[in-house]
Amino acid sequence: MPSRYCLQCGASVRDDDSFCGKCGASLTATAPAPRPNEFDPWAQSAPLPPRRPSPDAPNPAATQMLLVSVAAALMVAVGAAVLVLVAAGD
Image 1 (cartoon, one colour):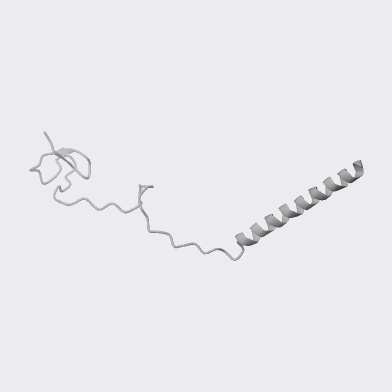
Image 2 (cartoon, helix red, strand yellow; image 1 turned 90 degrees about the vertical axis):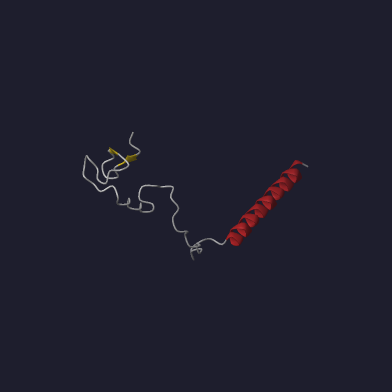
């Protein structure tokens, strides 16, 4: 029962064979090391450098302040509308 296979063609070979009987490839040479990320999409790659924010990126603090200002203005407008409607009903 063969316990090895030819690295070139995949034919089964005996343990004491030096060459493949099908393709003639040497069985004593080592297999070439696979190149990283050649066919494996899950292989680890070099870590990415940290990202710097682009100069055009919005400032999170300014965005938050804008949202708070808009919410406060809406609350004042709704409060004024309620006061006008209550005063008009009297």
